[in-house]
Length: 101
Image 1 (tube, one colour):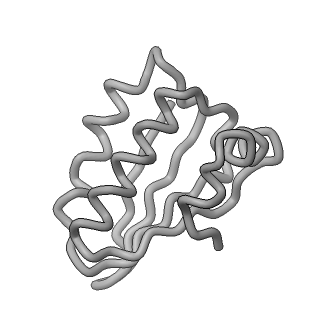
Image 2 (image 1 turned 30 degrees about the horizontal axis):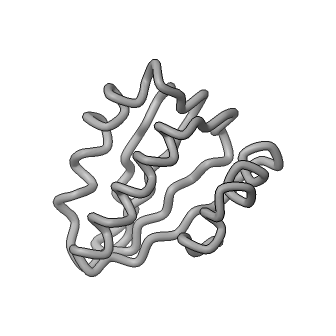
């Protein structure tokens, strides 16, 4: 699992998730995404086009990102969900918690 934060310009940041976001990597991935919590009044996009799998611990991490974005007045979007990952979002109700691009 690789999590890369890319600052696109002075108001937009993209978090690229690549691989499998499961229990074995969630703790490390949490540390890698912590810099996102410093952005205020930004548009943050989570690019999931390379995300192969997400477990419940991965979903918890996305909820934490969502909560920090809300507290920091950021607009958060998810894009590029593969069908298998979208099915997890749909089954868990996460489709109602995020905005999609």
